[in-house]
Length: 543
Image (cartoon, rainbow, N blue to C red; front, top):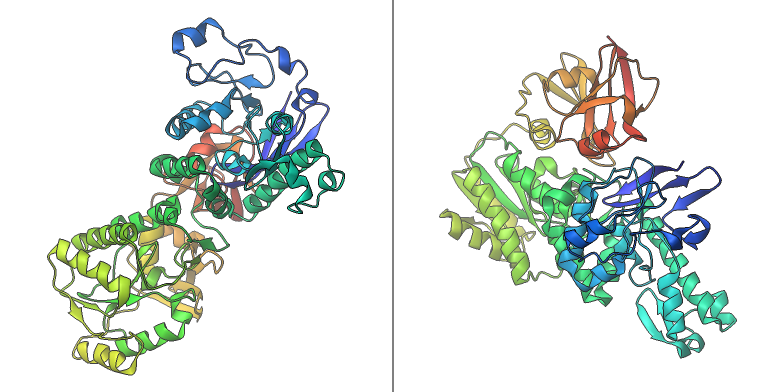
Protein backbone atom coordinates (compact mmCIF):
# COMPACT_ATOMS: atom_id res chain seq x y z
CA UNK A 1 0.00 0.00 0.00
CA UNK A 2 1.24 3.48 -0.88
CA UNK A 3 0.30 6.92 0.41
CA UNK A 4 1.00 10.40 -0.95
CA UNK A 5 0.63 13.29 1.48
CA UNK A 6 0.86 16.65 -0.26
CA UNK A 7 2.58 19.22 1.96
CA UNK A 8 2.68 22.32 -0.22
CA UNK A 9 0.91 23.31 -3.42
CA UNK A 10 1.86 26.05 -5.86
CA UNK A 11 -0.48 25.72 -8.78
CA UNK A 12 -0.03 22.23 -10.23
CA UNK A 13 3.39 21.89 -8.58
CA UNK A 14 3.57 20.12 -5.24
CA UNK A 15 5.91 18.96 -2.54
CA UNK A 16 4.95 15.99 -0.41
CA UNK A 17 5.78 12.70 1.25
CA UNK A 18 5.34 9.39 -0.60
CA UNK A 19 5.22 6.30 1.60
CA UNK A 20 5.05 2.58 1.05
CA UNK A 21 5.33 -0.22 3.56
CA UNK A 22 9.10 -0.08 3.44
CA UNK A 23 10.17 3.39 2.27
CA UNK A 24 9.44 7.10 2.79
CA UNK A 25 10.45 9.65 0.16
CA UNK A 26 10.16 13.41 -0.12
CA UNK A 27 8.85 14.56 -3.50
CA UNK A 28 9.71 15.99 -5.98
CA UNK A 29 12.58 13.57 -6.34
CA UNK A 30 14.76 11.73 -8.84
CA UNK A 31 16.01 8.23 -8.07
CA UNK A 32 16.58 4.85 -9.66
CA UNK A 33 12.90 3.97 -9.70
CA UNK A 34 13.55 0.22 -10.10
CA UNK A 35 14.43 0.19 -6.40
CA UNK A 36 11.05 1.72 -5.56
CA UNK A 37 8.89 -0.27 -7.99
CA UNK A 38 10.12 -3.82 -8.33
CA UNK A 39 9.39 -5.27 -11.75
CA UNK A 40 9.00 -1.83 -13.32
CA UNK A 41 10.85 -2.87 -16.47
CA UNK A 42 8.51 -5.83 -16.99
CA UNK A 43 5.20 -3.98 -16.81
CA UNK A 44 2.86 -4.89 -19.66
CA UNK A 45 1.00 -2.29 -21.68
CA UNK A 46 3.13 0.48 -20.19
CA UNK A 47 4.98 1.70 -23.25
CA UNK A 48 2.31 2.75 -25.72
CA UNK A 49 2.88 6.10 -27.47
CA UNK A 50 0.75 8.98 -26.24
CA UNK A 51 -0.37 9.63 -29.80
CA UNK A 52 -1.41 6.02 -30.43
CA UNK A 53 -5.04 5.63 -31.58
CA UNK A 54 -7.63 4.49 -29.07
CA UNK A 55 -8.24 1.14 -30.80
CA UNK A 56 -4.56 0.20 -30.53
CA UNK A 57 -4.23 1.33 -26.93
CA UNK A 58 -7.22 -0.72 -25.82
CA UNK A 59 -5.71 -3.87 -27.33
CA UNK A 60 -2.84 -3.70 -24.84
CA UNK A 61 -4.32 -2.65 -21.48
CA UNK A 62 -1.83 -2.26 -18.61
CA UNK A 63 -1.99 -4.24 -15.40
CA UNK A 64 -4.42 -2.34 -13.17
CA UNK A 65 -2.93 -3.79 -9.98
CA UNK A 66 0.68 -2.87 -10.70
CA UNK A 67 2.58 0.04 -9.17
CA UNK A 68 3.05 2.57 -10.58
CA UNK A 69 -0.37 2.71 -12.23
CA UNK A 70 0.00 3.34 -15.96
CA UNK A 71 -2.32 6.05 -17.29
CA UNK A 72 -2.90 7.06 -20.91
CA UNK A 73 -5.08 9.68 -22.65
CA UNK A 74 -7.20 6.91 -24.21
CA UNK A 75 -7.61 4.69 -21.14
CA UNK A 76 -9.95 4.77 -18.19
CA UNK A 77 -8.00 5.60 -15.08
CA UNK A 78 -7.92 2.88 -12.39
CA UNK A 79 -5.69 4.90 -10.02
CA UNK A 80 -6.84 5.45 -6.45
CA UNK A 81 -5.91 7.93 -3.76
CA UNK A 82 -2.30 7.49 -2.67
CA UNK A 83 -1.18 5.69 -5.83
CA UNK A 84 1.73 6.71 -7.99
CA UNK A 85 0.68 7.09 -11.61
CA UNK A 86 3.07 6.84 -14.55
CA UNK A 87 2.68 8.52 -17.94
CA UNK A 88 4.93 6.50 -20.21
CA UNK A 89 6.73 8.29 -23.04
CA UNK A 90 5.95 11.70 -21.61
CA UNK A 91 9.27 12.95 -22.98
CA UNK A 92 7.74 12.70 -26.48
CA UNK A 93 5.06 15.26 -25.49
CA UNK A 94 7.69 18.01 -25.65
CA UNK A 95 7.62 17.75 -29.45
CA UNK A 96 4.06 19.15 -29.50
CA UNK A 97 3.43 21.79 -26.78
CA UNK A 98 -0.27 22.07 -27.60
CA UNK A 99 -0.82 18.33 -27.26
CA UNK A 100 1.35 18.37 -24.12
CA UNK A 101 -1.18 20.66 -22.46
CA UNK A 102 -4.23 18.87 -23.88
CA UNK A 103 -2.98 15.49 -22.69
CA UNK A 104 -2.04 16.91 -19.29
CA UNK A 105 -5.46 18.47 -18.68
CA UNK A 106 -7.25 15.33 -19.83
CA UNK A 107 -5.17 13.10 -17.57
CA UNK A 108 -5.50 15.42 -14.58
CA UNK A 109 -9.29 15.43 -14.97
CA UNK A 110 -9.60 11.67 -14.56
CA UNK A 111 -6.89 11.09 -11.96
CA UNK A 112 -7.39 11.45 -8.19
CA UNK A 113 -5.88 14.68 -6.90
CA UNK A 114 -3.77 13.04 -4.21
CA UNK A 115 -1.72 10.77 -6.47
CA UNK A 116 1.98 11.11 -7.19
CA UNK A 117 2.93 11.59 -10.85
CA UNK A 118 5.93 9.85 -12.44
CA UNK A 119 7.42 10.88 -15.81
CA UNK A 120 9.86 8.09 -16.79
CA UNK A 121 12.85 8.91 -18.96
CA UNK A 122 11.93 12.60 -19.17
CA UNK A 123 13.76 14.70 -16.60
CA UNK A 124 16.80 16.81 -17.41
CA UNK A 125 18.23 19.72 -15.45
CA UNK A 126 17.00 21.93 -18.30
CA UNK A 127 13.35 20.77 -18.26
CA UNK A 128 12.53 19.55 -14.77
CA UNK A 129 11.19 23.01 -13.88
CA UNK A 130 8.44 22.72 -16.50
CA UNK A 131 7.72 19.11 -15.51
CA UNK A 132 7.22 20.07 -11.86
CA UNK A 133 5.18 23.11 -12.94
CA UNK A 134 2.98 20.65 -14.88
CA UNK A 135 2.37 18.57 -11.76
CA UNK A 136 4.96 15.77 -12.02
CA UNK A 137 6.61 14.66 -8.78
CA UNK A 138 8.85 11.66 -9.47
CA UNK A 139 11.66 11.27 -11.98
CA UNK A 140 14.46 8.86 -12.84
CA UNK A 141 17.99 9.19 -14.24
CA UNK A 142 17.34 7.65 -17.66
CA UNK A 143 17.29 10.93 -19.57
CA UNK A 144 20.48 12.30 -17.99
CA UNK A 145 22.22 8.94 -18.34
CA UNK A 146 21.39 9.00 -22.04
CA UNK A 147 22.93 12.46 -22.31
CA UNK A 148 26.03 11.06 -20.61
CA UNK A 149 26.21 8.27 -23.20
CA UNK A 150 25.94 10.93 -25.90
CA UNK A 151 28.83 12.86 -24.35
CA UNK A 152 26.74 15.84 -23.26
CA UNK A 153 27.23 17.99 -20.17
CA UNK A 154 23.86 18.86 -18.58
CA UNK A 155 23.00 22.19 -16.95
CA UNK A 156 19.72 23.98 -16.19
CA UNK A 157 20.46 26.23 -19.17
CA UNK A 158 20.92 23.37 -21.62
CA UNK A 159 23.40 20.73 -22.75
CA UNK A 160 27.02 21.29 -23.80
CA UNK A 161 29.82 19.08 -25.13
CA UNK A 162 31.57 16.98 -22.50
CA UNK A 163 34.66 19.22 -22.50
CA UNK A 164 32.58 21.65 -20.41
CA UNK A 165 33.71 19.51 -17.48
CA UNK A 166 36.98 21.47 -17.60
CA UNK A 167 35.43 24.90 -18.19
CA UNK A 168 34.68 25.81 -14.60
CA UNK A 169 30.92 26.05 -15.27
CA UNK A 170 30.33 23.71 -12.37
CA UNK A 171 32.46 22.69 -9.39
CA UNK A 172 30.42 19.72 -8.17
CA UNK A 173 32.03 16.45 -7.10
CA UNK A 174 31.47 15.00 -10.56
CA UNK A 175 33.32 17.86 -12.22
CA UNK A 176 36.17 17.65 -9.73
CA UNK A 177 36.52 13.96 -10.54
CA UNK A 178 35.92 14.59 -14.26
CA UNK A 179 33.03 12.14 -14.02
CA UNK A 180 30.35 13.22 -16.53
CA UNK A 181 27.88 10.57 -15.34
CA UNK A 182 28.09 11.79 -11.74
CA UNK A 183 27.89 15.45 -12.72
CA UNK A 184 24.74 14.98 -14.83
CA UNK A 185 22.95 13.15 -12.05
CA UNK A 186 23.98 15.72 -9.47
CA UNK A 187 22.89 18.56 -11.77
CA UNK A 188 19.40 17.01 -11.99
CA UNK A 189 19.16 16.52 -8.22
CA UNK A 190 20.34 20.07 -7.59
CA UNK A 191 17.78 21.56 -9.97
CA UNK A 192 14.98 19.52 -8.39
CA UNK A 193 16.06 20.80 -4.98
CA UNK A 194 15.92 24.37 -6.32
CA UNK A 195 12.46 23.85 -7.81
CA UNK A 196 11.29 22.40 -4.48
CA UNK A 197 12.53 25.49 -2.71
CA UNK A 198 10.58 27.76 -5.07
CA UNK A 199 7.45 25.64 -4.56
CA UNK A 200 7.80 25.99 -0.79
CA UNK A 201 8.06 29.77 -1.24
CA UNK A 202 5.05 29.86 -3.63
CA UNK A 203 7.25 31.27 -6.40
CA UNK A 204 7.63 28.39 -8.83
CA UNK A 205 6.02 30.45 -11.62
CA UNK A 206 8.76 33.06 -11.24
CA UNK A 207 11.40 30.34 -11.65
CA UNK A 208 9.65 28.88 -14.69
CA UNK A 209 9.41 32.27 -16.41
CA UNK A 210 13.17 32.73 -15.99
CA UNK A 211 14.23 29.17 -16.84
CA UNK A 212 12.05 28.67 -19.91
CA UNK A 213 13.76 31.50 -21.82
CA UNK A 214 16.42 29.01 -22.94
CA UNK A 215 13.92 26.73 -24.69
CA UNK A 216 11.12 27.81 -27.03
CA UNK A 217 9.16 24.62 -26.32
CA UNK A 218 9.00 25.43 -22.62
CA UNK A 219 7.76 28.96 -23.37
CA UNK A 220 5.08 27.47 -25.63
CA UNK A 221 3.96 25.02 -22.93
CA UNK A 222 3.69 27.82 -20.38
CA UNK A 223 1.68 29.95 -22.80
CA UNK A 224 -0.65 27.09 -23.71
CA UNK A 225 -1.24 26.39 -20.02
CA UNK A 226 -1.99 30.08 -19.47
CA UNK A 227 -4.51 29.96 -22.31
CA UNK A 228 -6.41 27.29 -20.35
CA UNK A 229 -7.53 29.85 -17.79
CA UNK A 230 -10.48 27.90 -16.36
CA UNK A 231 -8.20 24.93 -15.65
CA UNK A 232 -5.26 26.85 -14.25
CA UNK A 233 -7.32 29.28 -12.14
CA UNK A 234 -8.76 26.41 -10.10
CA UNK A 235 -5.25 25.39 -9.04
CA UNK A 236 -3.79 28.83 -8.30
CA UNK A 237 -4.07 30.02 -4.68
CA UNK A 238 -6.18 33.10 -4.08
CA UNK A 239 -3.25 34.85 -2.42
CA UNK A 240 0.39 34.38 -1.50
CA UNK A 241 2.47 35.94 1.22
CA UNK A 242 5.45 36.60 -1.04
CA UNK A 243 6.15 38.87 -3.97
CA UNK A 244 4.79 38.25 -7.45
CA UNK A 245 7.45 39.11 -10.02
CA UNK A 246 5.97 40.38 -13.28
CA UNK A 247 9.15 40.53 -15.34
CA UNK A 248 8.03 39.12 -18.68
CA UNK A 249 5.21 39.45 -21.19
CA UNK A 250 3.80 36.12 -19.97
CA UNK A 251 3.04 37.75 -16.63
CA UNK A 252 0.06 39.43 -18.29
CA UNK A 253 -1.54 36.00 -18.71
CA UNK A 254 -0.82 34.56 -15.27
CA UNK A 255 -3.99 33.10 -13.79
CA UNK A 256 -3.85 35.27 -10.67
CA UNK A 257 -3.43 38.40 -12.81
CA UNK A 258 -6.39 37.51 -15.01
CA UNK A 259 -8.46 36.57 -11.96
CA UNK A 260 -7.78 39.94 -10.32
CA UNK A 261 -8.85 41.83 -13.45
CA UNK A 262 -11.93 39.64 -13.87
CA UNK A 263 -13.03 40.28 -10.28
CA UNK A 264 -12.45 44.02 -10.54
CA UNK A 265 -14.67 44.09 -13.62
CA UNK A 266 -17.38 41.60 -12.64
CA UNK A 267 -17.46 41.50 -8.84
CA UNK A 268 -16.13 44.74 -7.46
CA UNK A 269 -18.65 47.43 -6.43
CA UNK A 270 -17.18 50.97 -6.55
CA UNK A 271 -18.22 53.65 -4.05
CA UNK A 272 -21.24 55.83 -4.72
CA UNK A 273 -19.66 58.63 -6.71
CA UNK A 274 -19.63 59.67 -10.35
CA UNK A 275 -16.13 61.18 -10.39
CA UNK A 276 -13.00 59.10 -10.93
CA UNK A 277 -9.32 60.01 -11.05
CA UNK A 278 -6.89 57.74 -12.89
CA UNK A 279 -3.47 57.64 -11.25
CA UNK A 280 -0.10 56.04 -12.06
CA UNK A 281 1.23 53.18 -9.96
CA UNK A 282 4.24 53.37 -7.67
CA UNK A 283 7.19 51.11 -6.96
CA UNK A 284 6.24 50.85 -3.29
CA UNK A 285 3.30 48.62 -2.38
CA UNK A 286 0.68 49.27 -1.21
CA UNK A 287 0.60 52.49 -3.17
CA UNK A 288 -0.63 54.63 -0.27
CA UNK A 289 2.72 54.19 1.48
CA UNK A 290 4.58 55.88 -1.38
CA UNK A 291 5.39 59.59 -1.39
CA UNK A 292 3.77 60.09 -4.79
CA UNK A 293 0.42 58.66 -3.73
CA UNK A 294 0.42 60.61 -0.50
CA UNK A 295 0.68 63.73 -2.66
CA UNK A 296 -2.12 62.48 -4.93
CA UNK A 297 -4.39 61.76 -1.99
CA UNK A 298 -3.80 65.20 -0.48
CA UNK A 299 -4.67 66.85 -3.80
CA UNK A 300 -7.78 64.70 -4.32
CA UNK A 301 -8.88 65.05 -0.68
CA UNK A 302 -11.50 62.32 -0.94
CA UNK A 303 -13.47 64.07 -3.69
CA UNK A 304 -13.18 61.30 -6.29
CA UNK A 305 -12.80 57.56 -6.68
CA UNK A 306 -9.11 56.74 -7.08
CA UNK A 307 -8.19 54.15 -9.74
CA UNK A 308 -4.56 53.18 -10.32
CA UNK A 309 -3.57 52.23 -13.87
CA UNK A 310 -0.80 49.65 -13.85
CA UNK A 311 0.71 46.72 -15.68
CA UNK A 312 0.13 43.80 -15.52
CA UNK A 313 -3.03 44.16 -13.38
CA UNK A 314 -4.70 46.82 -15.50
CA UNK A 315 -6.75 48.72 -12.94
CA UNK A 316 -6.49 48.73 -9.14
CA UNK A 317 -9.19 50.56 -7.18
CA UNK A 318 -7.77 52.25 -4.10
CA UNK A 319 -9.83 49.97 -1.85
CA UNK A 320 -8.09 46.88 -3.23
CA UNK A 321 -4.50 48.08 -3.16
CA UNK A 322 -3.52 45.79 -0.25
CA UNK A 323 -5.07 42.62 -1.68
CA UNK A 324 -2.87 40.10 -3.45
CA UNK A 325 -1.56 40.57 -6.10
CA UNK A 326 -2.12 44.36 -6.10
CA UNK A 327 -0.07 44.83 -2.96
CA UNK A 328 2.58 42.25 -3.81
CA UNK A 329 3.74 42.60 -7.41
CA UNK A 330 7.01 43.93 -8.74
CA UNK A 331 7.40 45.05 -12.34
CA UNK A 332 10.25 46.62 -14.33
CA UNK A 333 9.61 50.37 -14.61
CA UNK A 334 10.73 51.86 -17.92
CA UNK A 335 7.86 54.15 -18.87
CA UNK A 336 7.45 52.19 -22.10
CA UNK A 337 4.51 49.84 -22.64
CA UNK A 338 4.75 47.48 -25.62
CA UNK A 339 1.90 46.75 -28.01
CA UNK A 340 0.74 43.55 -26.27
CA UNK A 341 0.83 45.25 -22.89
CA UNK A 342 -1.20 48.17 -24.21
CA UNK A 343 -3.76 45.88 -25.82
CA UNK A 344 -4.35 43.81 -22.66
CA UNK A 345 -4.58 46.80 -20.32
CA UNK A 346 -6.79 48.72 -22.76
CA UNK A 347 -9.24 45.81 -22.83
CA UNK A 348 -9.41 45.73 -19.03
CA UNK A 349 -10.06 49.47 -18.82
CA UNK A 350 -12.65 49.33 -21.58
CA UNK A 351 -14.59 46.54 -19.90
CA UNK A 352 -14.48 48.33 -16.54
CA UNK A 353 -15.76 51.66 -17.87
CA UNK A 354 -18.48 49.96 -19.90
CA UNK A 355 -19.73 48.35 -16.69
CA UNK A 356 -19.18 51.29 -14.31
CA UNK A 357 -20.25 54.70 -15.63
CA UNK A 358 -18.77 57.95 -14.26
CA UNK A 359 -19.86 61.50 -14.98
CA UNK A 360 -16.25 62.70 -14.96
CA UNK A 361 -13.02 60.76 -15.48
CA UNK A 362 -9.83 62.73 -14.85
CA UNK A 363 -6.58 61.31 -16.18
CA UNK A 364 -3.65 62.28 -14.00
CA UNK A 365 -1.14 60.25 -16.00
CA UNK A 366 1.74 60.37 -18.41
CA UNK A 367 3.69 57.95 -20.62
CA UNK A 368 2.36 54.51 -21.49
CA UNK A 369 -0.44 54.62 -18.94
CA UNK A 370 -1.87 57.77 -20.52
CA UNK A 371 -1.62 56.19 -23.97
CA UNK A 372 -3.59 53.16 -22.80
CA UNK A 373 -6.27 55.24 -21.09
CA UNK A 374 -6.79 57.31 -24.24
CA UNK A 375 -7.32 54.15 -26.29
CA UNK A 376 -9.81 52.78 -23.77
CA UNK A 377 -11.71 56.09 -23.68
CA UNK A 378 -11.92 56.09 -27.46
CA UNK A 379 -13.29 52.55 -27.51
CA UNK A 380 -15.84 53.35 -24.77
CA UNK A 381 -16.87 56.64 -26.32
CA UNK A 382 -16.12 58.59 -23.14
CA UNK A 383 -14.47 61.98 -22.77
CA UNK A 384 -11.44 62.30 -20.55
CA UNK A 385 -10.31 65.33 -18.60
CA UNK A 386 -6.58 65.91 -18.18
CA UNK A 387 -4.92 67.36 -15.09
CA UNK A 388 -1.35 66.57 -16.01
CA UNK A 389 0.84 68.08 -18.70
CA UNK A 390 4.15 66.89 -17.25
CA UNK A 391 5.27 64.73 -14.34
CA UNK A 392 2.19 63.77 -12.25
CA UNK A 393 3.97 64.58 -8.98
CA UNK A 394 5.06 68.07 -9.99
CA UNK A 395 3.58 70.99 -8.11
CA UNK A 396 1.83 72.33 -11.19
CA UNK A 397 0.24 68.94 -11.93
CA UNK A 398 -0.92 68.50 -8.33
CA UNK A 399 -2.36 72.01 -8.29
CA UNK A 400 -4.19 71.29 -11.53
CA UNK A 401 -5.61 68.09 -10.05
CA UNK A 402 -6.79 69.96 -6.96
CA UNK A 403 -8.41 72.68 -9.10
CA UNK A 404 -10.16 70.19 -11.36
CA UNK A 405 -11.99 68.76 -8.33
CA UNK A 406 -13.08 72.11 -6.94
CA UNK A 407 -16.74 71.98 -5.98
CA UNK A 408 -16.97 68.17 -5.87
CA UNK A 409 -18.28 66.60 -2.68
CA UNK A 410 -16.22 64.28 -0.52
CA UNK A 411 -17.21 60.65 -0.86
CA UNK A 412 -17.52 58.14 1.95
CA UNK A 413 -14.32 56.16 2.48
CA UNK A 414 -15.85 52.68 2.41
CA UNK A 415 -12.92 50.37 1.82
CA UNK A 416 -14.80 47.45 3.41
CA UNK A 417 -17.62 47.59 0.85
CA UNK A 418 -15.25 47.28 -2.09
CA UNK A 419 -13.16 44.54 -0.49
CA UNK A 420 -16.18 42.39 0.39
CA UNK A 421 -17.54 42.67 -3.13
CA UNK A 422 -14.18 41.65 -4.61
CA UNK A 423 -13.49 38.80 -2.19
CA UNK A 424 -16.94 37.33 -1.56
CA UNK A 425 -18.97 38.63 -4.53
CA UNK A 426 -21.48 40.32 -2.22
CA UNK A 427 -22.84 43.89 -2.18
CA UNK A 428 -22.60 44.39 1.58
CA UNK A 429 -24.55 47.06 3.45
CA UNK A 430 -21.82 48.64 5.61
CA UNK A 431 -24.04 51.22 7.28
CA UNK A 432 -23.14 51.51 10.96
CA UNK A 433 -19.70 49.95 10.50
CA UNK A 434 -16.83 51.50 12.43
CA UNK A 435 -13.10 51.23 11.88
CA UNK A 436 -10.15 51.03 14.25
CA UNK A 437 -6.46 50.34 13.92
CA UNK A 438 -3.71 51.79 11.77
CA UNK A 439 -3.53 51.24 8.03
CA UNK A 440 -3.15 48.58 6.72
CA UNK A 441 -3.83 46.66 10.00
CA UNK A 442 -7.52 47.48 10.29
CA UNK A 443 -10.46 46.07 12.23
CA UNK A 444 -14.14 46.60 11.37
CA UNK A 445 -16.99 46.46 13.88
CA UNK A 446 -20.74 46.85 13.86
CA UNK A 447 -22.68 47.67 17.04
CA UNK A 448 -19.39 47.35 18.93
CA UNK A 449 -18.94 43.77 17.71
CA UNK A 450 -15.95 42.99 15.50
CA UNK A 451 -16.96 41.69 12.08
CA UNK A 452 -13.79 41.75 9.95
CA UNK A 453 -10.05 42.19 10.20
CA UNK A 454 -7.42 42.42 7.48
CA UNK A 455 -4.68 39.87 7.03
CA UNK A 456 -1.64 42.08 6.55
CA UNK A 457 0.20 39.30 4.72
CA UNK A 458 -2.32 38.81 1.92
CA UNK A 459 -4.60 41.85 2.27
CA UNK A 460 -7.67 39.61 2.49
CA UNK A 461 -10.55 40.18 4.87
CA UNK A 462 -10.95 37.70 7.72
CA UNK A 463 -14.60 37.53 8.83
CA UNK A 464 -15.52 36.72 12.42
CA UNK A 465 -18.63 34.63 13.11
CA UNK A 466 -20.59 37.90 13.30
CA UNK A 467 -19.00 38.99 10.03
CA UNK A 468 -20.19 35.82 8.31
CA UNK A 469 -23.75 36.67 9.31
CA UNK A 470 -23.44 39.70 7.02
CA UNK A 471 -22.50 37.33 4.15
CA UNK A 472 -25.54 35.02 4.15
CA UNK A 473 -24.37 32.64 1.43
CA UNK A 474 -21.33 31.44 -0.45
CA UNK A 475 -17.83 30.40 0.62
CA UNK A 476 -19.18 27.64 2.87
CA UNK A 477 -17.71 24.20 3.50
CA UNK A 478 -20.15 21.66 4.95
CA UNK A 479 -18.89 18.88 7.19
CA UNK A 480 -20.18 15.67 8.77
CA UNK A 481 -21.77 15.45 12.19
CA UNK A 482 -18.74 16.12 14.39
CA UNK A 483 -17.07 18.90 16.37
CA UNK A 484 -13.66 19.79 14.89
CA UNK A 485 -10.73 19.57 17.29
CA UNK A 486 -8.38 21.39 14.94
CA UNK A 487 -7.86 21.55 11.18
CA UNK A 488 -10.55 19.82 9.14
CA UNK A 489 -9.40 16.88 7.04
CA UNK A 490 -10.71 16.03 3.60
CA UNK A 491 -12.75 12.94 4.66
CA UNK A 492 -14.90 15.15 6.93
CA UNK A 493 -16.06 17.43 4.08
CA UNK A 494 -19.47 16.68 2.55
CA UNK A 495 -19.80 19.66 0.18
CA UNK A 496 -18.10 22.94 -0.69
CA UNK A 497 -18.92 26.10 -2.63
CA UNK A 498 -17.40 25.66 -6.13
CA UNK A 499 -16.03 29.24 -5.94
CA UNK A 500 -13.62 28.31 -3.13
CA UNK A 501 -9.93 28.39 -3.98
CA UNK A 502 -6.82 27.54 -1.99
CA UNK A 503 -6.34 30.36 0.53
CA UNK A 504 -9.92 31.64 0.54
CA UNK A 505 -11.50 32.64 3.83
CA UNK A 506 -14.41 30.27 4.44
CA UNK A 507 -17.10 29.38 6.96
CA UNK A 508 -17.28 25.72 8.01
CA UNK A 509 -20.86 24.61 8.66
CA UNK A 510 -21.80 21.45 10.57
CA UNK A 511 -24.77 20.22 12.55
CA UNK A 512 -22.82 20.42 15.81
CA UNK A 513 -20.35 23.21 15.19
CA UNK A 514 -19.31 26.03 12.91
CA UNK A 515 -15.78 27.28 12.32
CA UNK A 516 -13.89 30.03 10.57
CA UNK A 517 -10.68 29.40 8.71
CA UNK A 518 -8.83 29.35 5.45
CA UNK A 519 -9.22 26.81 2.67
CA UNK A 520 -6.14 24.64 2.15
CA UNK A 521 -7.56 23.29 -1.13
CA UNK A 522 -9.93 24.41 -3.83
CA UNK A 523 -13.48 23.08 -3.57
CA UNK A 524 -12.86 20.61 -6.39
CA UNK A 525 -9.75 19.22 -4.73
CA UNK A 526 -11.54 18.89 -1.38
CA UNK A 527 -14.17 16.69 -2.99
CA UNK A 528 -11.77 14.68 -5.17
CA UNK A 529 -9.14 14.00 -2.50
CA UNK A 530 -9.17 11.26 0.12
CA UNK A 531 -6.52 12.59 2.48
CA UNK A 532 -4.96 15.82 3.65
CA UNK A 533 -6.11 19.07 5.26
CA UNK A 534 -9.12 20.77 3.69
CA UNK A 535 -9.46 23.79 6.01
CA UNK A 536 -6.96 25.50 8.32
CA UNK A 537 -9.27 26.31 11.22
CA UNK A 538 -8.92 29.56 13.13
CA UNK A 539 -11.90 29.45 15.52
CA UNK A 540 -14.55 26.86 16.40
CA UNK A 541 -18.00 27.46 17.86
CA UNK A 542 -20.42 24.78 19.05
CA UNK A 543 -24.04 25.11 17.97
